[in-house]
Length: 86
Image (tube, rainbow, N blue to C red; front, side):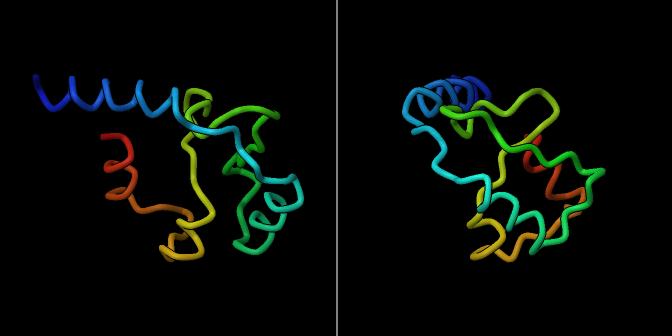
């Protein structure tokens, strides 16, 4: 099994196990405001019942912990985007 095959299998397994998002719209709006997201970044609040794996093409899922515990900031560096793409 190649690394790529393992990655695909893991993603399928994770998708089946992810719970629906439990954020409120107010939490999302607060994140956008507190971290000064540009409207041009197209931050999008998911529909009710969606999981983190349901991001549409061209979007990535970012968790609150990235910002609060990981000190992640946008815009992201090219290096970080390459890691996400991998």
